[in-house]
Amino acid sequence: MDRWIWENKEKRAAEENRQTITHVRLYDGEDKTSFDQGSLTVSTHRLLWSDGNRNIELPLKCITKVESHGAKFTKSAKVILTLSKSPHSQTPGPITDSKHDYIKLSFVKGGHQEGETSIRTCLNEKRWEKGVIAAPNKKSSLMGGGLVSIEQQIESSRQNADQSLNSAFKDIDNLMVKGKEMVILAERIAQKLSDVKTEGDETVELKSALLSIGISNPVTRESHGTGTSYHKSLGSELARMLDGPLREAGGVLSVSEVYCRYNRARGIELVSPEDVVNACKTLTPEQHGMELKKFSSGVLVVEGDNFKSIMDNLLQTIKSNECCTAMNLSNVMSIPLLLAKERLQAAEQHGIVCRDETDDGIFFYENLFCLM
Image 1 (cartoon, helix red, strand yellow):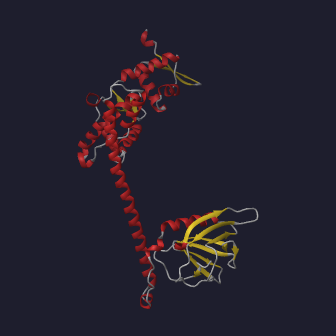
Image 2 (tube, helix red, strand yellow):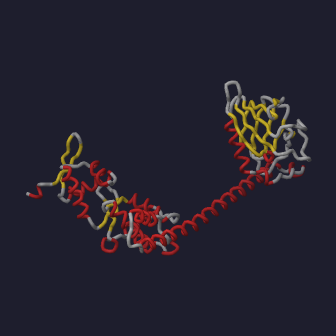
């Protein structure tokens, strides 16, 4: 308790009150004190305790450790604060000497979790290291001290915001540099693995994982201009990236899935949905082996130039099961339900399948009429 001092009314720089909790009792180590049933205010610089008659404070810089004990049947919850040694030139307080190096805050009517969280947060911020605002002279007070105070608070908030933004952008810059380095390294390892003649399952799996990490030098507006030329470059890059995923998906991918896969491969150089759609519009079967198509429902997909093989697989699935619903096709071919419906409708339009609408749903069969 000898670290507590009488409250200093002088305003600290950028000080904010974070939490106020009532009915808080102070302990000197394990010993009760006369400071009972007061309100505790946690600020960014200090702890303030007051019972209306007595006002004391504890600078946060004196706290070295924070612990908590939950409430028991007959005991209230407590927050234990381990304190540093009392400095020789400390401001006088209610107790001049104590044998304990810790205090307890007893929260008689709850609130210890909020209090502990606020204390830990303020300790991590260390706002008290920014110094103390000089007390304004009488002249400045007479000429509008309230405005001066507001301006100081606004300036302090702006400086804190600038500092946080600068720190955040530094982290992003570091991430960008490291990300590009990792992609380049992955490509080198994948190239070395491709030179190995005999490949086991583990080698193939590792190569696949490395190649899926991303695009090392993605197309950007800075490097490829704007407008049509930019979208054509995006389309070429998109086609190279989609070659494998399109085959795995059976030849059709929705534009929303293309957008997600493409941006994941690009890493931090993200592109907008509009740019992805415009890039897909530049795809042609002759040059890229795929194109953008719009189903009758309005759904946009990127489809490979293997429409016949897609329909053959669909028909084979229906033959093996005698009939098929959109849900069955979605499960068997591992494609979204919406794409399964669109494929069945496309097959119906080309006379490959025919439908039977029943009370149990819509079933699709092989179109035997075209064989007659």
